[in-house]
Image 1 (tube, rainbow, N blue to C red):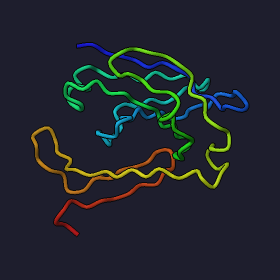
Image 2: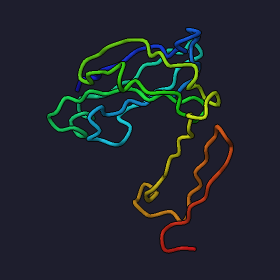
Image 3: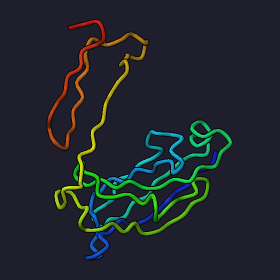
Length: 153
């Protein structure tokens, strides 16, 4: 089993300042797979490494070798995408710098939009027995959300 990495730095294009703690999602450039393929969080210097395994790529894409692009989030808000600028052939390790326009930084422009996530599924213990209800917490915002198990009020 092989692992491939994209190591890089995410920066503000105009100031050249790192986007500390930004979240970087790797997405399918062909849009055949709509889920996040892999993700990482930048450190305080804007540096990050995203890893994918060949078995993960095969499970998602079959024998097709995907090209991925990056979507960058800061504080839960989309900062920008590299769909037209930086792409990664996922079955090869690579590195680079993701430069994003300052106007798209979180809270800096009306075009910035919040990214919402949905959580679905059944939570089971190790024996496969379903749990009654589960609390999902976004620790960044400290706002818990409760979702009852289907069929229960």
